[in-house]
Length: 116
Length: 115
Image 1 (cartoon, each protein chain N blue to C red):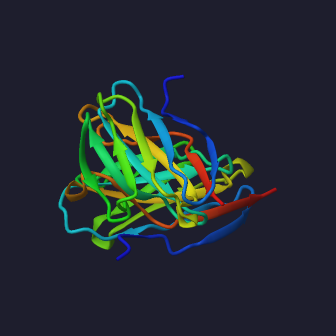
Image 2: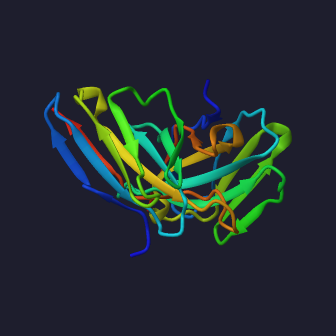
Image 3: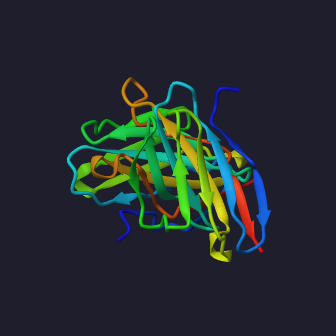
């Protein structure tokens, strides 16, 4: 399978706990994006990386959220001290920078987070 | 402010009818991209099409067609002879240089095709 993969697919946690999600992009894609989608809404941009550099962060990304892409390959998104409002689907997408598919973002299946 | 507006929240059609999903966008960039994605009940977003701001040619792919009009800032999507498998939520999205080409999605249109 050469698509974007995300783990875990589902996560249930108690309020106040920390959680970490992982995204493995398509191997030749150097841009990686994180989005959050709540029920009945479109995905909302959180942050993106070009290789290992985090270039943009949305105002939605509070101090409790941190993302890394240490070697320019997979990425992790950590949420500290989770709140019930963090319950959502967290989506990862990757895209090439350049070439015929420039800027086409391909999405993973998402990680559904439920905070009790 | 919402940069992408999908005014139709839900549409219900009977199989074989044609249906058009509307999308209106707002940007100050001269270089931008527009997208349509499909999100079936399984949840995974499926890429359908990308258009750049310099290419206003309409596109047809099988039963799908797209009408891009810069004069009205619209990028509408038509499904011809709809099928039950077309039932999904469809999102229009805009990406701009200023935001690193991150996707700015509309709220989506839920399409239900009944037999």
